[in-house]
Structure formats: structure tokens, C-alpha cells
Image (cartoon, rainbow, N blue to C red; front, side, top):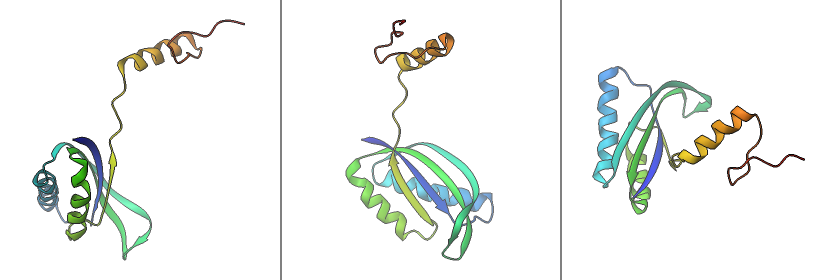
Length: 125
């Protein structure tokens, strides 16, 4: 199982209940393929950079979920058949930041000096 992020664009929803019904169908499709939806972020209505299929805007949703990598192609095909989904794009979710890297960044900011890959400050010249 790998962690993915799915950016889904819906045609402009009519009301809150209609939007929630569409989101339930989208989440159900992921669970039907053996995935688990971890987080749903509503990004709101966005204007497209250029007109697509006679549409100017869409409602963007970002889903974070885990699923078997072999099933991602089948999931993409199912969304292509869904009339409620205008566009869909899946990417691997970025790995969580390591704790050691966060501490090294904090130390670097305090000292205002760069830190080498091994976590030590460079020698003075």
C-alpha cells in the first residue's frame, strides 16, 4: 500500500448537500478498490487558466489516501466514467519530514550559518 494524493476537479456544485453526495461517491470508489481515505481537503472554486470544455471554473478537492499501486490505474479509469468528475490527477504523497531534519533546520536558522549534510556546522576558514 502506498500513500497518494488525488486532485479532483468537479463541475461547479449546486449546493452543499449535492457536493457532499458527490464526495461520498468519490470516497466510496476508493474504498471499493481496497483503499483508505485519510484526509479530504476542499480547496474551493478556482478559475481555470484557460477555458476547458466550455467551462471557466471548477471545484477543487484534494484527497489523501492509501491504496495498492496496482489498483490506481483502475481507479483512474472509474473516475473517467464518472460524470460528476471533471478532471482527476493522482500523485505519490510526499513523505513526512524527518524529525532530525527539522531540528537541523532550526539550529541553522539560529546560527545563520549553513549546515552540512552530516548535521555539523562547517569549519571556519
